Image 1 (tube, rainbow, N blue to C red):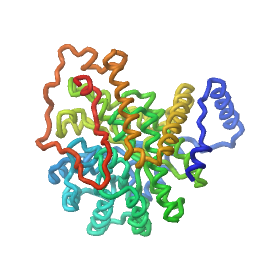
Image 2 (image 1 turned 120 degrees about the horizontal axis):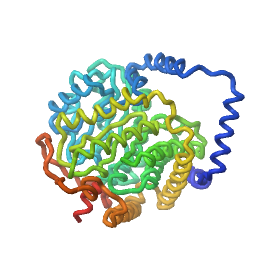
Image 3 (image 1 turned 30 degrees about the horizontal axis):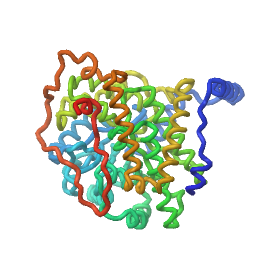
Image 4 (image 1 turned 135 degrees about the vertical axis):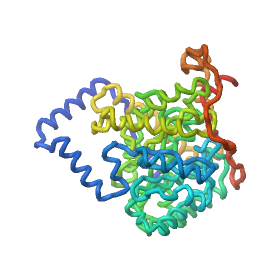
Length: 474
């Protein structure tokens, strides 16, 4: 499988002449094709089909699932937040437990009773629920299944995602609770019970957010995600389990920032890369399930209101790129755990995009852009080269253990920081038009920030999240 993937994958850059020829080919195909249903017919059909899946009923109207984070260390307060979010338009919740790489120092206590308290009176049969990758990801699968049993909810009829990605934990926290060899050998068996239940959920995830927020380039983030997804396949192959049963349960999570053009291309490139990887493995392509979260590294502690605009632009890019689920980080997060106003603004940014811009009425908003097609192809090529580099280093976990990928990410971060210092890259309110603004303070909820645990059997250099504006004070 490894040789096939590395040798057969190719994403040659697209030039203008090739792009024009592809457009002419599509035009000819449409001219020769028989009549197709109108968009309104297709939209009605989509709505009708969605009604058979209660957990996904609300997605058709928005075009994507509006996800709000549940990351308060106080489970009762987290429950009140979640109920308010669902009552006011959110269609999904992301449970962010403590010590998760993307918890940013906060998070719900990683205990089944805390999960049950946070989801008290939440209509689980009408929302999408995801568990963000965290050190106890495998155990949390059992917590969710048991909670569903007690609530007499059929998990097969829900939209679920369990974030199991050992590489993201290893990179973000710098440790694993068992050796790499033991992890790779035990995971297929430990997940066999889940597959036996036949729940149509994302179980394994390739999470690129930890790399993005540590300073990785878009290609490095995509390459690491692809290497993570392939490592999931490899574990099942070595356990002699059919890969065709694993691919529908593999999902992706990535970050997007205020660079709309590049962010749209990144989401599109991810789908092309995963399709190519499946093709190289001889697996029938399965849909690429993509969760997108707005970037933490782009946020500024100074002039925090500018983060509202950055996050809105990022959310627009995620929607235009075709994300299945989107989560917007509240604009005051650099100062602490966001309170109700910041959470409401994060939620409403998506609701406005979904309900007032008519963005969701476009089946493929970016179709027909020459520059976007060229950028997407270029990202695919660069990401595939990063993937090949990681594979040559023994795979993602081995590369992290040796510190090789971290070295490239840190170098990319330093290059970006130098551009900030040379005024080639600007942050409004920090390096541009900063007069009259200061870090000040923003309303937050009282809680203590936590540092990820460092206990484990295998250690590596961690990749903690770093905001770009914070690098300027170094």
